[in-house]
Length: 113
Image (cartoon, rainbow, N blue to C red; front, side, top):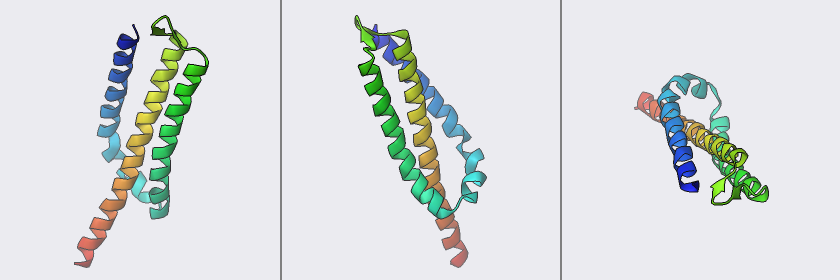
């Protein structure tokens, strides 16, 4: 049963990631309005915080005995889904922040040439 739960959660995470990745171009102006420092520091922090949330959430599930009888309890499964979504979101935003640093740098290099 845990395999079915895992595959369903994975499908949700991938679907969320695809949907959010398609929205990144709409975030471009907001990201470029942030300072280079905020994007340069915020992106890597989000990468690590997302991983911390994921590992912390999985530790919580383990501590609450969320895996029983070969399946996740409904509460544990919900937590796993939510922490996975939070992880995917943090990775997408962090990546978009760091890519925006490269885009702005490339635009400035073109203007100087």
